[in-house]
Amino acid sequence: MGFSSDIMHDFVAKEIKNIYSSYDGWKCTPRQLETGYDTLVVLERRNSGHRDCVKVLVTFGRSVPSPLPEELTRADRTTDGTVTRFAYAVMVPANADTSTVPAGVRIYTMKSFAFEGKELTWVKKPVRKSESAPVKVPA
Image 1 (cartoon, rainbow, N blue to C red):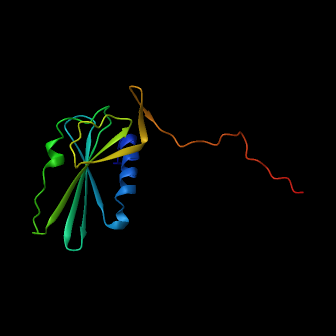
Image 2 (cartoon, rainbow, N blue to C red; image 1 turned 180 degrees about the vertical axis):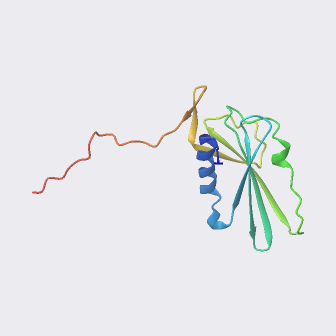
Image 3 (cartoon, one colour; image 1 turned 135 degrees about the vertical axis):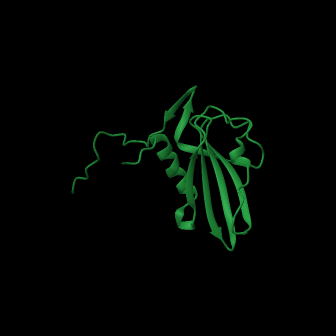
């Protein structure tokens, strides 16, 4: 059959891929969490004989869940014996409350979604302000 995913997660996946580009060797694997709509994105790459692993918690909530899910902070074991460097991050909509995020955890702000008051809104690209493009008249 076909592949089905949520449009909100598609926009966020594009934003994550802009930060962690496949050009730089990052492989992206999303995992659904049991906490509802939150997603854990695992990014991995090999770099100079090391294995880099970044886990990003994507949440659309007004505030970041406290405490952070164990899946985010737990270091995965490697089977090949390479040294792994772990990092953790949280991606939240603009204007979300990040006061519960511990020090040392990166915070990324979504460019596609933001809170306006208590409502989550989709931030669209700005459109052209005039009805038609200005036409230059040859002199």
